[in-house]
Length: 416
Image (cartoon, rainbow, N blue to C red; front, side, top):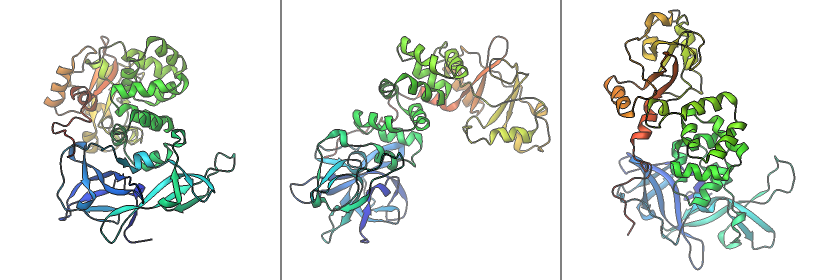
C-alpha cells in the first residue's frame, strides 16, 4: 500500500492537529467532487471543532494524513460548514452505495474508499474496497470482497441499493451524543435509514440525544412493537417526553406492548408539566437502606448501566426500596463514602439538610438550587414524603438550552 494512501472509514474520529501539535478538532467526513473523467477529487475534510461546530478544511491546508492523525497548516476557517452541490460526503453518502463492475462480473457495494495523494499534491479517490452480494441464505454469510479502481466500476442509480450498514459501522465508536450530532448533518431520508438499521439499545440512546422533531420522525417509521422495545430501553423521563408528543391512540397502543413497570413509570411522569420537577425527574435513582454498608452501596454505584450523574449519590428510604413507596430519609454523597470505612452504615452519614423537591416545583427554582449547593441531583418526594424520583443536572440543562443548541451557531454563513 502506498504511504500516501488512506482509507476514509478509518479517518472518522481521528484528531486534527496544528503544526505545534495542538488538537484543533476531529474528522467527521471527507468531501470529494466528481469530474467529467477520472476518479473524484478530494476537496477537503469536514471537521468538528470546539462547541461541536462543523467547519470545512480544504485539502490544500492538510500537510499530512498518517498514523491515525491529520496535520493541518493551522489556518482553519471558522465559518460553519455548508455542503456544495457538486460535493459528496464519502462516509455519509458513498459508503454502502451499489456499483456495477464493468467486467460484467456483477454488482457490489462500497465498503470503504481509499484516497491517495499524487505527485502534483492533489488527493483523489484511488481505490474502492467492495463487497459482492452474499450467495448463501445463512444470516452469518457475507459476500466476497475485492478491490477496484474508479474506472473499473459504474455507480448504480438505484437508491434502494444504498445501505446504511457501512455508515453505522463507520460511526460505531461514537458516543450517542456524537452520533446524534453526526446524523443531524444527514438528509432526512438518510437519517431515517440509519436509525432503522440501529439495534434497539443504540437507537434508544440515540433518541435520548436527538431534538424533538427528529425523534418524532423516527418514531413514525417504527412499528408499535419495536417502538415499545426501544422506549423500554430509554430513560423514563426521556421516554415520557417523547410519548407526550405522540398521538393519544398510538401512545395507548405502545403502552399495551411495554413492560408494565416501565409503562407505569412513564404514565406517572406524563402527569406533570415538563418544566417541573415531576416532568424532569428520572424514576431510576440508586435507593439504599439505612443499614446498608458503604461497601454494599459502592457495589451498587459500580454497575455499568448506572450513569455518572446518578452514581454521584445514593438515596436512603424506609422499606420498600422502590420509587413512590419508600419514605425518604436523606442522601449520601459518593465523595463522603470514599472517606469512610467499607463497613460503616449509610445511616450514620446521611445528609438530611437538603430539602427535597415537590413534583410541581418549577425548573427556575431547581436550577438555582443545584447551582447554589453545587449539586448534580435533587430528590423529589410526594405529599407523603415518599421518594418518587430524582432531578439531575443534565436533564435541567437539556430544558434550559435552546431547542436548536446542537446546531446553533451565531457565525453561521456559507462557504465562499
